[in-house]
Picture (cartoon, rainbow, N blue to C red):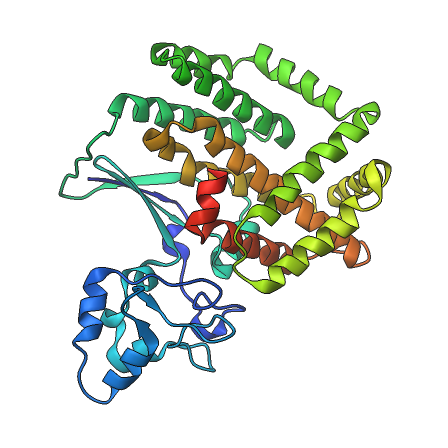
Length: 368
């Protein structure tokens, strides 16, 4: 079995009660069957607390009115862990913030940016992320797994990440190249022309294609297209209202952002976008690196999952739109703050976005 991890994987450690938020609130924690059987066999004084805190029918931990796990105490520590030890944790709690994607004989493990500490690591990182592999004994086979399609996706993702991390090209053009490649691969797969996918991957590494994408982007961003830019941005943002709401205060963030960025029309939106770009260049020049890291994170985590549903373009679009929307959140917070923004606020908005989008199967199905 081959394992793949990002090079910062072993740098992570949980700050527990010192964390600025908690991973034990805001979403329903599903319990695996093995842990559920173990919880049903608990004896002694803790048995009553166990049966009051676990919903054995729904296979979840119960929550209070603030959607905090029933085992989470006022100090943001887990009473289950404190009373029964580390081995008592269910699979979800034991693994988080590790996110696992499984393929035939390959297991890819990333760290979810829904965790404040992981988001902070990524927002502070300057060097490009590298992915490390190591082998462990054991093999796993999957029915209906297409190894040829997976090899195409893995090759495409490798080249996409190379393009994304080429900082001699503007981030917008890099993302444009990724989206173009994903679109053309999708067309080939739809027409069952898998053997021509290698040609597509090569084409998007050429100088000719890069210049074509640059010209398309410059045309779209021209002042005379400001109305199209505004409607495009607003349309993508409005998709967030269609998702399952995990924390009530997230709705407030969305409505505030929409009011600041879109309420006054295309001219005002263009003006704010230009002002933010100038501020970013002078005051926070590393923001493009931070957005690059996020694009790499989303693309690496989800793209090869298209081997199971062939939704290649949707996976790339999810990564692109997530980065775009996070930047929109940055922009609105900057305006709200009186045209100021700091790294802590960037980190907060990243992990809050991730929690709403990535920690709901329903939401992931809608956007992937």
